Amino acid sequence: MIFAIVGPSGSGKTTLSDLMRKYGAEAVVSTTTRPPRSGERDGVDYHFVTEESFLQKISQGEFVEHARFGKNYYGATKSAFKQALEKSPKNCAVLVCEINGFRSLKAAVSGMGQYLTGVFLSCSRDVIEKRLQNRHRAGGLTPEQFAERISLIDGELSCEFEIAQEKSSIVITSPTMEELEDYALVLVNSSSRLVVPPHPVSPDDEVGVPRL
Image (cartoon, rainbow, N blue to C red; front, side, top):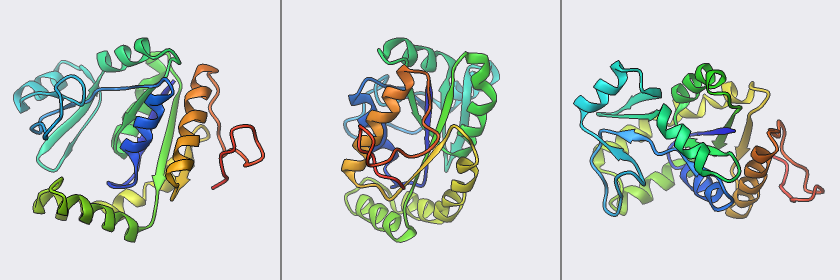
């Protein structure tokens, strides 16, 4: 099972991915041309490559999905998916991506012999702006990156409807950390059963995940 987590910058995509890893999922390690940030490790957080190397991988058909975000390229290779699925005891690979990456995965997943679930994390524009401002003040975003991500918010939020139309996908709206943890557990466990929850789970159900 492959989970593609989509949503605006600052919506909690990486947090959900990390929580799913806690329960047995494996992250698909993406490849990027951007330089490593403080504390990031090559091959763990990302595969860091030159633009020339990235473009060569595109021409050789190595990517399942790839996109350019600002001045940098990001993508996930076929081998990265294979490694994540083999490593996960739950047969569960999770990828944080943008909407075009999700579309590419939809087209490619049948040939990989896997199921795909899209997870869209949604929250208000005000909340996203505040989170990006905090990240900018903490030095996690340059002024240029901050301005660019602010400019993309409306377009990213508009992708919620597209994800919601997929029968095997879900939308999580303004979750608390506790709710995200519950969703992470449900999603990973559904992967091991090869069953995707098409709708939020009722609070009365065993895992206690709230309805959206």
